[in-house]
Image (cartoon, rainbow, N blue to C red):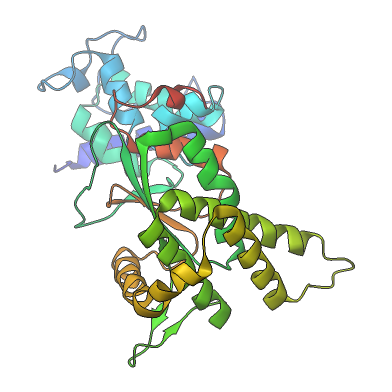
Length: 333
């Protein structure tokens, strides 16, 4: 859309008004300039933004549309989700006041939309992935692919705290699959950030996930994460425990608790784990999810929050569900 000089001037004026709303009180005695005619201040429907278009019939519908496009600068989520998570957010209210001011001073829908990038906004934890198609599993569920390093402290937190909380609330509405972050050299040798012991554990865990199932993997990996976190938390006087001993102990303890026989998995570790990990590596590089933990929803929406607490992540997860089909749990933030 082309905006003429008068439109640009008006844009500057409204952005100045927005800044005043966000930073202080406007000067009521300041002269008004520009060619726009003031509309009703009572929230009426006689506004330019509702004219010459058929998508929206009411101011409320139009307001809701813009609320999905603007990210709250305080909570870093779209305004519609922010309203549920933080009903009293002052920053959101001021942005909505700015939108109302635009509508009341004769702005069209296209002009408001073109000016949204000029508003001070936050950064959503969910971003669309270009050129990637959705793999929505249907049935009201969403797909979650997450990427870990088995010895990464943040990955351990994700498995021990965040993933279980997600599954407790969303249950079968979350179709999930773990992936592991490794590198391959030209000769096919596998390496990982935290050393050879992490590669060995990645091989074991990916075989559990693929050859036994995600439920058993979660039982094992959550125990593994908890055991490691506990061992390091108990370290006295700043002295770190023997990492190798901690990893071996956690591995043996949790395999027994989860009912996984290392001997039964040994064949997979030797013959299939490298192929499994190579596929994960290809996906991680394609999706740019080489940091632990990383997550992608429906194969085309990346979660950029890493290991933030689940309470902070939940509104963003809910935003992945189509509007009108969000589960009841999304009404409770």
